[in-house]
Image (cartoon, rainbow, N blue to C red):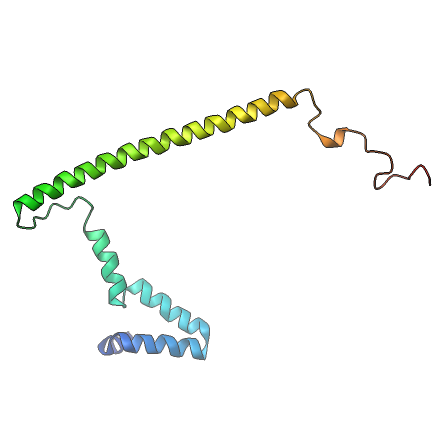
Length: 137
């Protein structure tokens, strides 16, 4: 991996240049370099964002140094979590009501359609339909 170490010495511009050159020469080479850059995290901003989002959970306990702010933050996070649970419950009830209404409509359609033939192939075709000789024939 001497090439990778040398590219790392030059930084992001070298990797971007190699990727663009790879796309110009033969597009799968450029695509392979792009995939490697994403997978390995060579492009620092991509890796930085992913690491930050994984390293700090939503309820991080690090202190800001200001106790009043820390208390306010803790109360706000608890309130937001409670609101999220309430909203999720509301969405669950809404989905259940929608499912019930759709099922009730389906059952009503089934009951109403029970007296009518449900399979259009079971009815005889009208005279003169495609595939039948016409009476004028």
